[in-house]
Image (cartoon, rainbow, N blue to C red):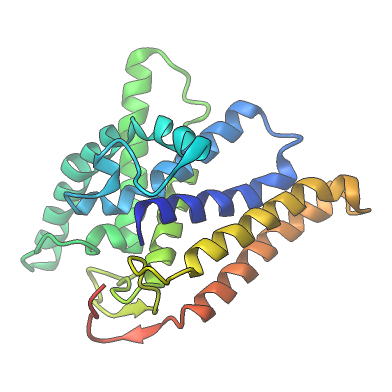
Length: 250
C-alpha cells in the first residue's frame, strides 16, 4: 500500500485500541505509543530506496491533518536510514550465512516478514537505548515505543498482505505468500480509505461510549481488541486474501 494508507490504517487501529484507556494513560505515554506505531507503519519499506520513510514527508495527505502528519514525518529519514544500513543489511548478511544462501535485496523481502520486523524492533530499541543512555535521558518509555513500533510493523505487513504482491510472512524460511486484491494505485480503489473511516468511527464510538452508554471503562477495554480484530478480519475477507505460489504484479 501507499505510505499515507499505511499511516492512516495503522494509526486508526492504534486509536481504537488506546481509546478506552485514554482517561488513565499518561499523555506522554499515549504520544509515544502513537509515534511508535507511526514510525513502525512505514519501517518495513526501508528495503525500498524510494520509500516514504526516506522522504521526510508523505504524499496524499492534505489540510491540517496532512500538516500534522508531515510535521512528524521530518524525523522519518533518521529511522529509515538507520533501519536500512544498520539493521536490514546486517540482518540480510547474517541470514545469508546461516541459511547458506545468497540474499538478493528486494522490496518485500526480509523486512516484510515476521522474523525481519521482530528483529528490527529489538535492534532499533537497542540502538535507541544506547543513544538515550549516552544523552542521559530516561529509558522509561522506550519499551512502550518498541512495542508500538513492532505493532506498527505488523500492521504494515497485514496491510500489504491485502495487495496483489502480498507478503511472505515466514521469509527467508519460506517464500510462500499471502496476497489480496487491493490495487492501491488505482483511481477506483476505495477499500483502504473506507476501512480507515470505519476504524476512525469505531475509535470515536469508544471515546463517547462512557458518556453515551452504560458501558464501563473495563468493559470497553475488553471490547476494543475484539472489535479491532473483527474489523480487520472483515477487511481481509473483502480484500480476498489467499495463499499464492507465484508473486503477482503490484
